[in-house]
Image 1 (cartoon, rainbow, N blue to C red):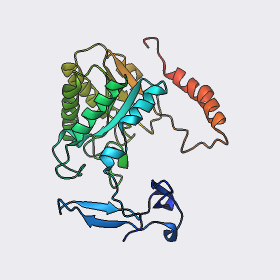
Image 2 (image 1 turned 60 degrees about the horizontal axis):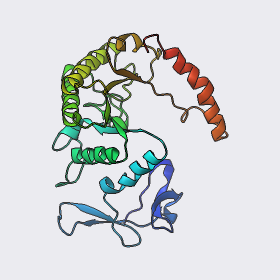
Image 3 (image 1 turned 120 degrees about the vertical axis):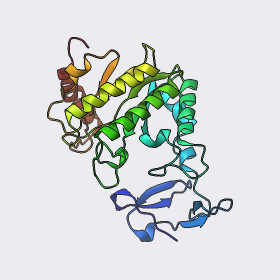
Image 4 (image 1 turned 90 degrees about the horizontal axis):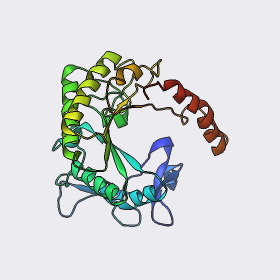
Length: 279
């Protein structure tokens, strides 16, 4: 039997609706979970909750068709879907789904179909590159190390972009392909990033010959100059700069309204400083 602890030293249990929640602050309040072998395939494991039921497959339960319906019904017109570089591989590293699972790309195919059903466009965002471009867990790193940026990792990344562009070029709801999420400065140099972005842009345009599909280039995190890509990207057609400003980690607002007001004033002026005459 196991107690499961997650972020903020909270423990997992079940609420009255038999939903997984992480609110317990001590192991004595946590539920007991059991790890058991799969009855069909002994090489796989399952997790049994305190109520005796097996936890559902994360791939089929975390994001569902109803989420796409909800997004569309609330007036949004696109979804940005993060993927990792091993999406185009049959396996590893690291293992991204159980043995015999239909496959990572099949899940993205399904998301495209749901988005199409609810009139949503799709932005495919490469969130983790070989070696990791930022050292974060969501960037494919377990130890904070940034190893992306040499000739080999860039070539591998371009191959992934090319494969994604080729696979989804025919989907009419493809809106954009983002070449890389949040490369971290100074570990990823600007010259290295420009080299990759040029190759990635070319790969997309060779596979997706449509004027309504964009290529997105993410600003580096931790850069001293948020305009460092403006002149560079102005030479490309249908190119968008992705800039991330976080209110979550460094700024505390007593109310939601104050947070929104800050975005309308401070953040809007920051965005205006990035604009150029060529748009």
